[in-house]
Structure formats: C-alpha cells, structure tokens
Image (cartoon, rainbow, N blue to C red; front, side, top):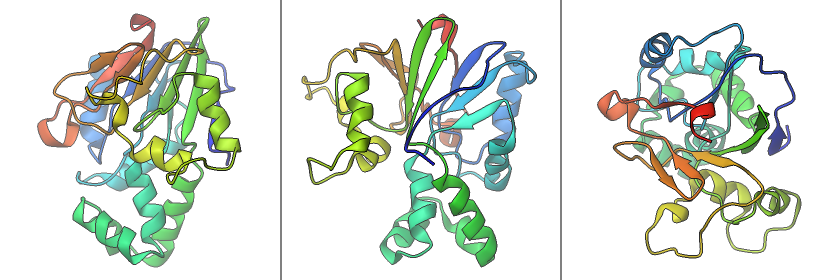
Length: 226
C-alpha cells in the first residue's frame, strides 16, 4: 500500500470526516444516525486512531471493510504495527490504552497489524470540485504537493515524513509561525491533538474532540467547511 493515496471511487452522496474514534463504535453509530448519514451513498473518512482506550476496538477495525468508510493511519495504528516486534513500541502502546491488543492471539494481532499497515498515511479526496487532504497529526509543508512529494524522497530530517504526519503536533502550536495556509488543497483535516471543540487555523482543521474522554465525537460535513 502506498503511503499517499488518492481516493478513486465515486462518491454519490456527501463527504464527511470523523475525529479519533478510539474504540467508541456505538458512539460513532449513534452520531451517524443523528446526522442521517446515508450508508449507500455517503463516504466517511476517519483521521486515524480507530483503536485504543475505548472498549469496542475490534468493531472499529471492522469498519475498514465497509464501502462507506475509510481512514488514514494514526499513531495508535502505528503502535499496533510496531508493538508486534518492538518492545519499546509495545510498552508505549500498553501505557496508552493498547493492552487489549496483546490479549489477542498471535494470528489476530498479525492480521490487525497487516490491516493497519495497508492504510495510507496521507489521503486526498476530490469531491464536488474541492480537494480535501487527510492526515492524522501534522503537515510540515505549507504546500500540499510538496508535502506529498516528501514521501517519495529520502528523509531530510531526523524524523521521516510518516513519523511527522502520524505523531507530530507542531502546526497547532501558537509559537510555530512558519506554518500558514496550505496551498494546493482546499482543506486539510487532522486529529491526534485533543481540543474541546473543532479547531481551525488557516485551511487546516483539527477534529479530535475527545470521543473516548467526553463522548464528544466530531463529524464534519465537508461541503459545509469549504
């Protein structure tokens, strides 16, 4: 699976984005019913962190088999992948809500890690003449095409592009004035950093509003954003 993916299937209905679900399957389904989500025609894009901390992790993973759902890879998916063979990853994972993963049998763990490894780190979706970018944690560049291009090049810093995209938070820091409007894309949607309500800076949106902490799961209708 390529780290950068462009969505190539027709979206007949609306395009939505959902913040970090973290194992809160029932909460997600309740929210979808509240907004009258059309499971036959709409598409829901998750910004990663489908699992950990919540209790319905396997059901959240099963969402990836649904035609109306897709996701980018978050740092908690990355922890599942690394935790299979790396003890430091495993310790970090268990300390951050991942103990459920290591209670599964080895084959189930392998299958989940393989599924997560197939998720893109960056997703681009074109819908109704607008271009939307999805990444879990951070976009380093102020140009969408330059950002995508870094995934095909040798890393130029001590952190590779995937690690920055899944784990970084720098763009939301008030002190980092080098981060401005991201050209070449209408909106970039991210999660990872918990905010009490959706946060917008320039054309970037952060939508992890603490589903597992406060039961406040954000779903954005992207036709209303841009």
